[in-house]
Amino acid sequence: MTRPGETAAGPAARGGETAQTLDRGLRLLHLVADAPGGLTVTEAANRLGIGRAAVYRLVGALTGHGMLRRDGDGRLRLGAGVLHLARRAQPLLAEGALPALRRLAEQAGATAHLTMVEGGEGVALAVVEPSWTSFHVAYRAGSRHPLERGAAGRAILAGRSGAAGPVSTSGELQSGAYGVAAPVLGVPGLEASVGVVSLAPLDVDVVGAQVAAAATAIAAALS
Image 1 (spheres, rainbow, N blue to C red):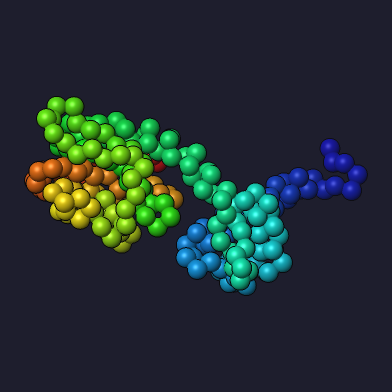
Image 2 (image 1 turned 180 degrees about the horizontal axis):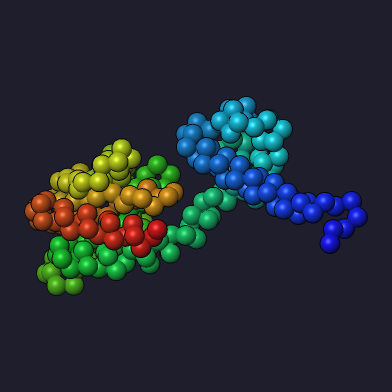
């Protein structure tokens, strides 16, 4: 039964409009996240294929929740609310990766780690040390490094072009340390790698296969 002045399709239509608005808001967040220099409202409207007035409404709502902000030039940038959500999600990501990291550390006899991108750098999100070795690298969760240095960062950069193979480096982050890492692919919204770091040279063929298998297992666990 319909209420006076309301058609039978009214609630469904409003539900469709709500879903469309949500979709546009999420698309806008992704566009801003992928624009290092930020976006103007006009640029956002053109890329979304909607009017500037609609973008202003989206920006108003997302700014109110801290998801977006306007810089001094009026360009749209991600807000602190996105970082808050990311930090809340990190423990869940680490928990999902731990079983594969433990297996990898024991197999390789080296410190295993999950590294993700945050603020343009690689951040060690979870670290597992092997239980049976006499010596191993002490690698602290939360450690940051440039993506252009070290196996973990280089694997993430390789993953951006779709390359899934392992990457090896020597002494780029710490003198005398050897690393092998592979990107975690197929998890929407996540740029990450899985790797090991050792005080002794690593057999890239053997350890590379172990690292790649761990990356696949973690991608499945987080998907």
